[in-house]
Length: 180
Image (cartoon, rainbow, N blue to C red; front, side, top):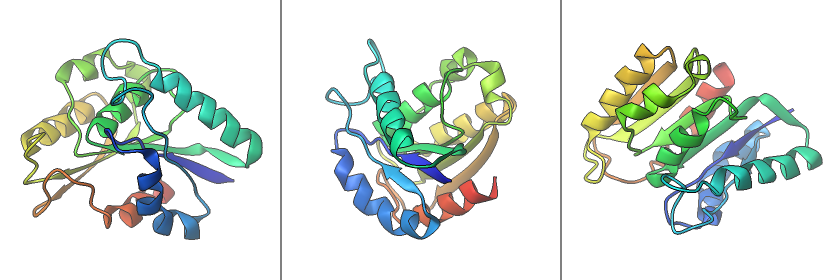
């Protein structure tokens, strides 16, 4: 079976994410899904139309291809990474692994997350030390909060990275996903 990797990003259309992840996904037989937010950015406050839309997309992909339900990765950058936390920490989430990049995380999100869901949940956090939008201290604090809540957190801090997606992280995330 193939794992599904959904990659939401901020305001960027999802198609651009396909090109960034395609090289790492293809040799592993992964299915890469890169949706675009239904609004100006991902549903981080108010009505969440993005999670139901993402679930509809997953249903369509699963109906057409053999999907490994034990390897469902949700990743995204910036607002998309924050959305990965928001929807990925829900008790009903279908995603088995989360890999937010350059995301922000409010401590209340850990308190509001489903405790059973968090226990052992594999999360790979990538953040740039030079991030000007979401300071690296936020990512470090997130690592501590999620680890304390029982998640299995891998943390990758990149010294010369600002608020951008590091293309070279794709292969590392796929190796991590395969090893879990």
